Amino acid sequence: MNIRMTRHLHLLAVALLTLAATLPARAAQEPYGETVWGWRFTQDVVRGTTICRAISSHPSTRGFIIQRLGNGNFFLSLLAPGVPRGNYEEGHLGSGNFATKVNIRSDGSRIYIPADDHDMAQIGRTGEFQWGAGPVRGQTIRGSARGMGFNDVVQRLRDCTRANGGR
Image 1 (tube, rainbow, N blue to C red):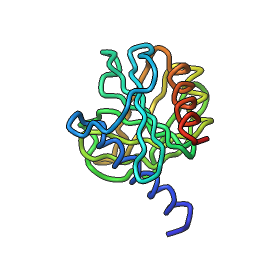
Image 2: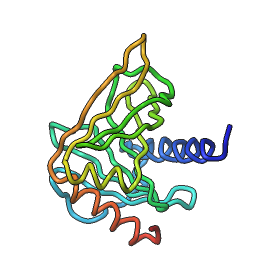
Image 3: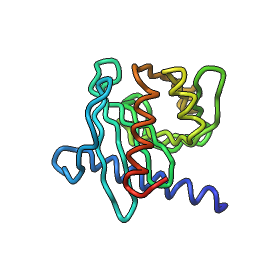
């Protein structure tokens, strides 16, 4: 296993653990600012890592969480019960005329997609993205998300991590 892969798996593990903290029974998070476009924002520190989250309540994106770690990495988390548990190293994330390979992780009910600043800037500009995970039984499972105010959400998450000592 190369060092880059190890770092990505570590970041994915941190993301999965911190997303689990969004459940109401573990309310260690604090609000961050006002709701924007149906997204509420929280801030938290887990094992010394700043995590800012945007949690959608809009009907078209219900269950969608975007989080940004203090180091600047983003993770998109969507409900995806049709994607079997596993790692999909040949996954993809696209928006507009941009597409990139990503390692999508599924826990059987949600998928977790890593994204960087470039990915999120593109998603913010277009207001939508597409993803694909597979192969699953020989086919790629695809999905998409479109939402109002993605650009504002991404900017608020950047502001949140900076306000908490991150980049």
